[in-house]
Length: 73
Image 1: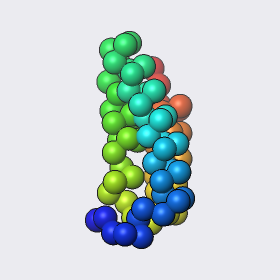
Image 2: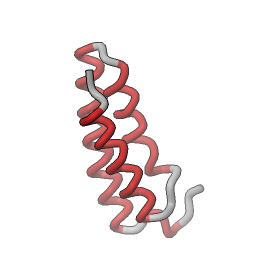
Image 3: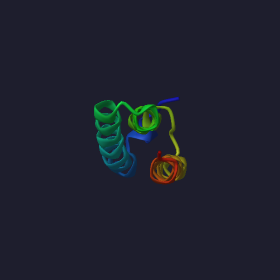
């Protein structure tokens, strides 16, 4: 779970970037009443709190962002 190593600069930067993308996706999905962007947006905002490895944080964020782009209506 969480450790003191998980609050490094690179993880905080990833949290800021992917959290912002997730927030915009969530708001877009809420306005358009689309469940896919809302769900992926929530995942993008929350997953960084459960991953501690820097590489895992970036890979999961890139995959979720790609899903947001390619898996649209």
